[in-house]
Length: 224
Image (cartoon, rainbow, N blue to C red; front, side, top):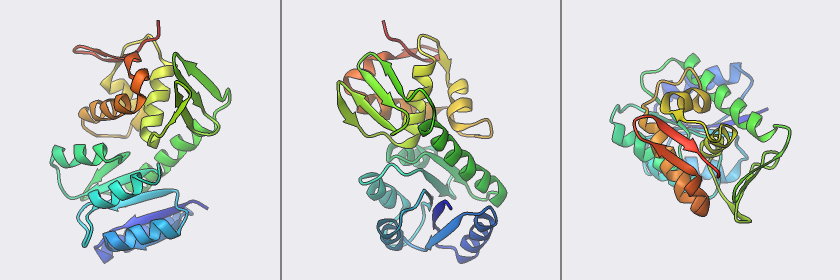
């Protein structure tokens, strides 16, 4: 049974989301503030975090930063704000997706299922070793190496790199990347792609040279 950490200070919202998740067969651990969230994360093996940004004591950004310093667990941010800066900041800290309040609990659960399915699918694929230049990916162990050095990617960064490599030497528009990495039901800003590409390049080091920006089009993974 997959275990979800739900971090939300509004009790009614927490109860509604918990009920929907439990009806889908997930085990739910609840936290109503940032400090409870960190404690719950440290004392439980959770598979995904639903994280409200506006929580007491330690806000969602702080929780996301702390979690990412120790784990690559999938994180979906829940925010009542529409500001792009908050969303971009969340992605910069390592969040994988976000939903904006008010939202349908059914849609939120669908996003949880979709993200977990994509992560599991990418890890469990056959033909486990994928090589492209100085980059090597072990799809069975979810391990990425650049020049024989292991690098740590978030689930979404991993999916993005895997998609680009599988489509190497082809121009991928931001729309195509969003559809294939985030899913067809994702309604996020196209800048989400740019933010993740920037983070991915920073982590890849020497391997970043393969990700080419195609002006007014998108990106291409090119290995000569």
